[in-house]
Amino acid sequence: MAEVHAEMVANVWKVLVAEGDAVEDGDTLVILESMKMEIPVIAEDDGVIAKLLVAEGDVIQEGHLIAVIE
Image (cartoon, rainbow, N blue to C red):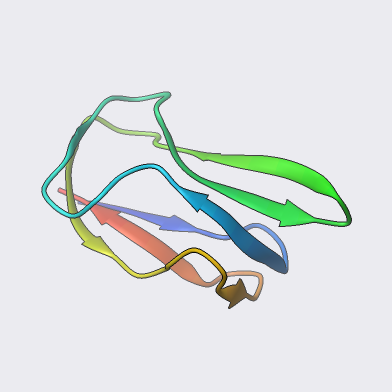
């Protein structure tokens, strides 16, 4: 199991995966927006999205859990 956390305070601009989706190391899960920059959040392990804890438009804090990959 791998947890994906936010590295900064940001807005969730786009969600590219859903619970149950298979992902591979390097796939983009969500795109964050901070200070008019788009920051992709990348999967660091192969697996399936077990939990997706953000939605488009959410404001998240540094360390916020974005997704769990099993």
